[in-house]
Length: 144
Image (cartoon, rainbow, N blue to C red; front, side, top):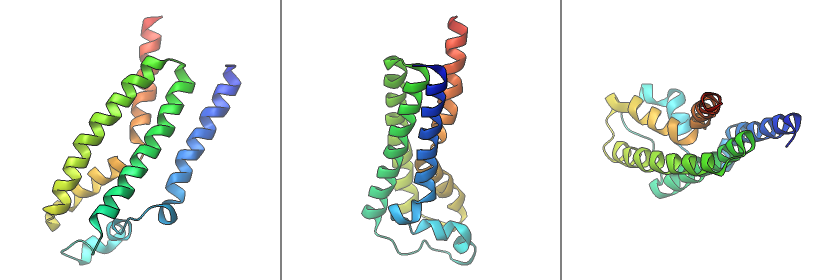
């Protein structure tokens, strides 16, 4: 793939990641969005929520971001090994973070709101592509 075309496709994929964030209120059920804006300051408890619907929306959002991120990595490096490793990485991270999310939701204490906030943030934001992209680039440069 020509370098200019690769850059264009990667930019479109990053626009897709931004679209997931931009349309989050209409695409995903998440009563914690407004809670973490300011509600945590006034309330001692989480807002009422349908946990399984929330967890389903979080899972959908995580894997949608992961799929787009895997496409970014594939377009950038054109190596199946990169995608396989990244998919394994995403799977392990998802298991660890979703277990932590379960624990923090079911054992919520107001003093631990930041823990819930950051675990949720790692689940719903495409943070790992920002880590993996330079890591694989560095690895490719070291190999040369």
